[in-house]
Image (cartoon, rainbow, N blue to C red; front, side, top):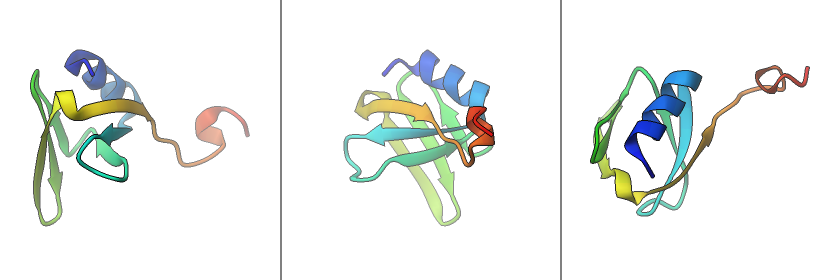
Length: 73
């Protein structure tokens, strides 16, 4: 995954789901607790920090909470 694309998606949506090779479940990234540089993603959690390589991200998609978020209300 391209780091610039990932940053743009996160900035545009405020939050983002990502599939990361080393985890069975997708991770939720938020603009306020995530830093993305050219090589790594750093996610601040309540009990620590999770860091993984950009190359480990295999997909990203907008995370929504309601039909209104999708314009389907």
